[in-house]
Image (cartoon, rainbow, N blue to C red; front, side):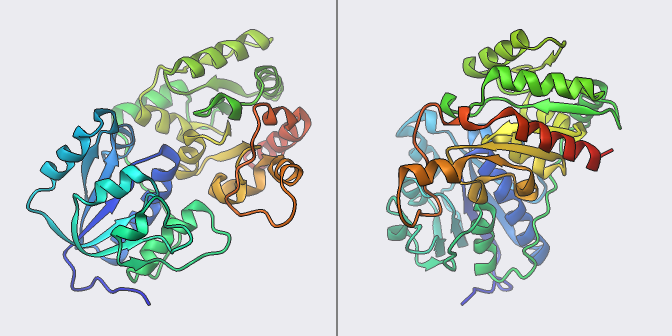
Length: 346
């Protein structure tokens, strides 16, 4: 049974991280806004994720900075002091989110269904979303919108960026300029593809008349991988890794023709901008965490790998284990997906 918020004034959303997940959550928030345009929405969000979404209209953000340790919980309680919400959407299964939710005063507290409400989430909620057998993360999030009576669950995104960031991106990638953006690094090194194979795709793209940009964050892992790709590549690449803010990167991804990435935030950022994505998957199920509008363009060895590690029925969210699984993704199918998308987006 779904709740109806027609007589409600305020809603609090708890989703702290990560970049890909908050991109999915934006589609849900904006579906809620279409159904309940007068509803006051407060979003408790992580510090980094806020930098991407801070210009979204109609949402008040409260930052939870986990780097502050136990002080972050007291700060959240202080920031929300005196506020009482009609509804809390508790959308993060993590012990820190369960503890953080105790600082949020709400009559109706919606969490995941019992099978997914781990890390004590079920202890701090009093209403659950509909159980789904094989959901993509985005569909799982849309279950929260459905639970409060939202009827149109079609994902749409409007993540505004400052004009200066759009201008920056258009200077880097002029309109209709054929460009492949490679966001090569995931948060864990084991989820990264091989630098020489990224380089080979870049060389192929250049041979087809594309310019190739390397993009990503300033972490040492990302910088080193980009440098390794440059060294392995016989063509000149534009290395922008660590040189863009999140909103600048979002604008660059919008200008791109095709994005190549493993299971990482920029792949989902590209989806929000309507840009074609080739996702590379070995550790996680792309049906659950792949680039939502480009699942047909994923190159995945996940099902073969996980079937070799576990017999019988494999749980939908099961992660494959191993340090070198990404080596199983060969060059040829990635080139084939690039060619397919290249012809589609002429």
